[in-house]
Every structure is written in C-alpha cells, then in structure tokens.
Amino acid sequence: MGVTSIKLEKLTVGYQGIPILEGMSLEFKAPSLVQVLGPNGAGKTTLLKAILGLLKPMDGRIYLNGEDVTGQPEKAGRYIGYVPQLMVNSGHYPVTAWELVLSSLLLRRRKWPRLVPSGSDVELVQKALKLAGLPEDKWYSNFWRLSGGERQRTLIARAIVADPSILLMDEPLSAVDPVGKVELARLIGGLAKKKLVVVTSHDPMLLLDYTDYIVLVNRGQYLMGRPDEVLKLEVASKIYGQAVIPVQQHIHICDAHR
Ligand SMILES: Nc1ncnc2c1ncn2[C@@H]1O[C@H](COP(=O)(O)OP(=O)(O)OP(=O)(O)O)[C@@H](O)[C@H]1O
Ligand SMILES: [Mg+2]
Image (cartoon, rainbow, N blue to C red; front, side):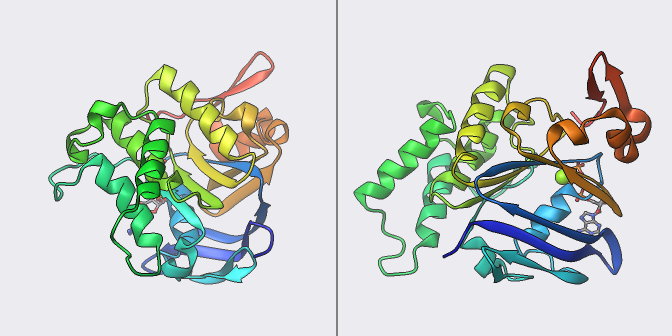
C-alpha cells in the first residue's frame, strides 16, 4: 500500500439529481488534519458520505490511497474509521457501548473465526474506550441510553479501535463538555500525526493548533488552504457571508448550529 491519501477528482454529489457539492478536486495526504467547515446544509456530511462510498456521486471519482473506491463502501471501508454525526433519536435495537466498539473490530476481519473475540481484541476495545474517555461504568450500558457526549465518545472509540489509516469524523466534539472537548481535541490532534484525519466542525478554533488544512464548503462553492489563509476575514466571508465577525486579529464564525 502506498501513501495514505484521499483524492477527489471533479466530484459532484447531490440527491435526486440535484447537486449539493460541485466539481470538487482536492487531495490530502497523511499525516494531516483537515477541517471541513461550512454552515448548516453546506454539504459537509454529504462529502464524508461520498468519501465513504455510501453516496454514489453524480460525477467525478474518489481515490483512497490511489485506489478508485467511488460508490463502493466495502472498498472504502477497509481504510476508513468513521464517526457519524451525532444521532439523537433512540429506540433502536439494544446494543452496549462495548458491543458497538467490538463489532467494528470483528467485522473488519476477513478470516474465520470472524466473530469470536480474542484476548487481544478485548485489549484493543478497552484501549479505544479509554482513549475516547468513556467512563468504565458506562461500557456495558445500552448505547441508546447514554448521554450525547458519551455516545460521541463511544463512536470515536469505534472509529479508532481497528487503527485505520484514514479517519472521517463528522462533528465529533459537538455534544462533548468543555473539558472533554480539549481532551478529545488533543487525542484527535495526536492521531493526525500518523493518520489522515478529516473532521467537520462548527468551531474551527477547537482543533486549530493541530490543523494542517481547512476546506470551506457551501453548496457549489469550496476552497481549501492553510488555516491562516482560509480564516482571513475576506476569504471566510465568501463562504459564510454576514456570519463572520472580526474579533481583533482573529475571526469568529457565528455558526448557530449548537
Ligand atoms: N438523503 C437526502 N436526501 C435529500 N437531501 C438531502 C439528503 N441528505 C441531505 N440532504 C440535503 O443536502 C444538503 C446538505 O446536507 P448535509 O447533511 O451534507 O449538510 P451539512 O453541511 O452536514 O450540515 P450540518 O452542519 O447541519 O450537519 C442539505 O440541504 C440537506 O437537506
Ligand atoms: Mg452534517
């Protein structure tokens, strides 16, 4: 396997024939942390789903590590750990946090005995849950009865347990408390020293110290650059419009999502 990378080639994705993101051509290489920013409905989740192969593009190709994985979740999933945007509705089938993390590890295994955990699997699950900061007394609780932040930590553990080379995280810190945000930002920053980590966010400052590139998206428009270039008032205003307020030398994005 060559260098870990994500390459988008003239990517157009949308729903029912209506494009949300159009003609995106970008390439990222590991190790790096890429933040995808944009207002609600801009297409951030849509972009991650396209990279995961869950959404077939209307046009263009997606390459992971040089391999064409366009619209092929089984292929793309081999390289990716994914943290979905927080799910708030419950009532799903009962599954514990532990089972959710373990199943992600076991399902990646291609050989028999696929679904029988070994001692080292158990250690990997413990390590992932500890790193993601889920308290031990919650490990065997029903996932759907956990708090928003606890669920988010479980989903982060699930994404990292199999040590994938690419991590796609959709607003991974949104429901986490302030102290947890700083801890998890450090964890994500550390992971990005070796992996290719793509994080969507409504608060670019949390991960700013660790960020190599920012991609701003809003429907048909996108731009990418180093954080200091992209977070300039005139650049960010192109995408966010009136929602950008200069605060001394820094800009503040008033994104009223959460
Ligand atoms: N399955 C779908 N069918 C039709 N339209 C959809 C579907 N999923 C998303 N959309 C639309 O696509 C647009 C982009 O949605 P997306 O979820 O990618 O936005 P986002 O940038 O992640 O927003 P947020 O910050 O709220 O998470 C939205 O207008 C949304 O309504
Ligand atoms: Mg989203």
